[in-house]
Length: 468
Image (cartoon, rainbow, N blue to C red; front, side, top):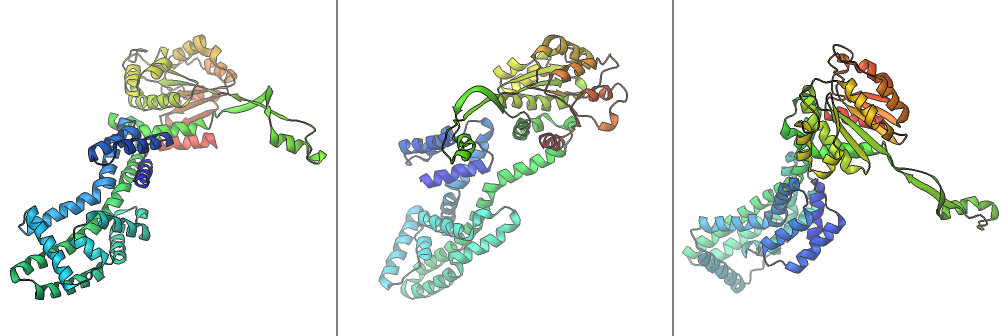
């Protein structure tokens, strides 16, 4: 069972569920303590130890059903359908199974293992055989629906389905001569139905293996579609669905401001550097070298436009900002329209949905005011510029639509002189920059990086260019 649980954990990870090594070990301990006698307790033990996010619960439920209950339940349901087709009760079917086993023993008819497990309804062993053959043919490599037929044929051939059909036909001939007519008709019908059951089970088994992969495939396809959709037209549900993609994007950005190391006054003994520096002495360590590098932690400051004209974009961008703050130890976040307000503590203390709703509802700044980038930048310059230094990457998310107010671009010049780098991501088409009330042409000259970002895939490409 331990190996089966470990494989189930791998399956969860393949479908986007984050499970740490410690959580994996916790699941083994929990199962060892509660045992396997109660399927419900077993399921809840795995859920409690492996799942920590509400968003992963549906994936866990679907995969648990497929992995632990799928084929076993399928075989049981098929036996119940056979029982119904024969017009028998549980007791009648058991009597038939006993009578068949007795006849086989009296006639001395040897059966293959597959035929024996099928006719005695030993579903546990039959499932083991199916899984063993599945491993032999590499069924775990299935990825697309059009592959089902080929893998089902391979599984049937390797399992020996064609030989089984011939074996059962010979068995029916011998039993026909040994059993009374009325009893023989039921046995014949039972054998035919069981062969049909196995054929359906093989197809269903292959389908279930594909379904284990489909959650991740569907997720990938869905994110691909969302990735090309403009931020302006995303629904609230689609923005929530992007949480995983946003997290990956923020992790990419982490490479830009990765922790660097610099020389310090003290450090630990560095054996590699010592040996390298003492090669001239034949490797004898006359000169001891120390690793005096210390971590130089970076800082991110994000300014996000939350004006009504970019409300939908802002919701996505705030999710991005929230994720950044979750990934980094030193992130300061701000929202602005005309006024500017810091939301760092709000994002630290509230869950993502509450934090974003409060930031957009006007509790931090007046979101119904007319945009005034120049005024917001002056407030940042007055109140927060001293916090900007050569370790700071400043990121501005906004359309630069200033409602013909003074742009105060000089504030960006001062920010750029103090910061490590200044990045501006604009959700508008580049062709519109500088036209109408757009001040983008004035602002961009003071930025290290200025990019058009109207959808998720575009934002991915921007981050990749920055990183590389």
